[in-house]
Amino acid sequence: MASVFFYAWGEPRFVILILISILINYIAGIFIERYDRNEKIRVTILVLSIIYNIGTLMFFKYFNFIIENINYIFKGDISFIDIPLPLGISFYTFQIMSYTIDVYRRDTKAERSYINLGAYLCMFPQLIAGPIVVYTQVSKELRKRSYYLKDIEKGLRIFILGLGSKVLIANNVGGLWDDMAQIGYANISMPLAWLGLLSFSLQIYFDFNGYSLMAIGLGKMLGFDFPQNFNFPYISKSVTEYWRRWHITLSTWFKEYLYIPLGGNRKGKLRTYINLFIVWSVTGLWHGASWNFIFWGIYFFVLLSLEKLFLKKWLEKNVILSRIYTILAILLGWMIFAITELENIKIYFGRLFSFSISEDWIYYLRNYGMILVIGILFSTPFLKKWYDKQANKILCNILLLVIFLLSIAYLVDAAYNPFLYFRF
Image (cartoon, rainbow, N blue to C red; front, side, top):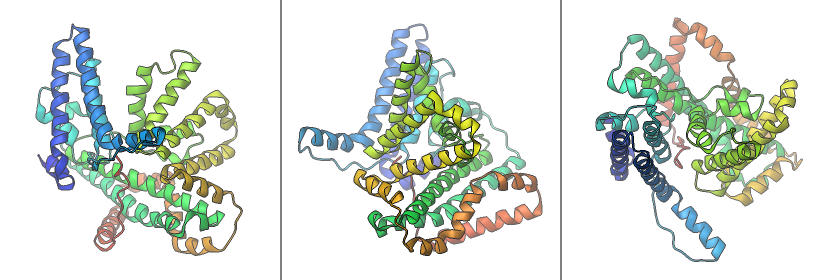
């Protein structure tokens, strides 16, 4: 009930939608288990539940996008509908689908308590920004949890680190990227264009990782072990490795519930690449109802396919070049992700290789240089190694207290506190 109240505080109109989603999948799970020996009924129930889940997501998130493209292709004039996006719908839709699919696969028993299933889906720490938690990861804890002061303390530490990541680093470094749009992409120099991409890459990492750490920390305090969502992705030596470190729960979800059911790599090379293309197109579309997200997904499909074909063997032999290649690939990917208008992507890409060297970047480097350096430093595991050694010492406790107080002061004082995941 507390989680439902939390959701209603941010999105009162769509509480009923999430409660209906729980009810439909709750009933589907029970009936799939009840007709265990009748495969036709089981498949029918599973398909109907998936149609409801995907259909709801498509309507609220993609209806106007579909209308826009129909109008463009057929020169039509179909009116758009003012459809507000329910908070966290992409996250909780994938979570509840994993439950029903796992019941069908017999990987878990159907949940007989509507309250337990509702607590799983509505759990406030990760409801609106992940990580994506599948039912099998928390099913035991939903029924019985153990509380220890050491776990509450550990969870509090993780939460504070996440809060500091979001508030002190992401919010501050993100101001540079916002300045790019205000200046106008056509008016920035080449060095400033690269600085802008660097700032966005750090902003989205510390923002998303910050939310994930806060969720994991809160879960730990409540007796739940949520999965790790980020593992220093910017130190990767290939795009393949990067996607094993970035948004791990989403990558795992697509692998388990889309890529493998499509056949994975078990049906020949051609089918493997077709499956990869489908998965990455859907991955891009999941992030937002816009063509730039689809192109972003296809962009990574191309890079991953090239690495699978031949590039990864070469990268493994060239450690320095592999890191340069990976960082450049990630930065260009964030350009496609961050700029929704295709024409503006073209303009920004042109500025990245314009060889226009004016002095505009010096001003922004002076203003944002320190936070950029801090962001780069904290995006590597070097300080984590030190933190792990000092975790139980007084100095570490003092630092955590300072981070917490500074974060609260910033939230009270600052007007800039963006929520980058409104599209989800």
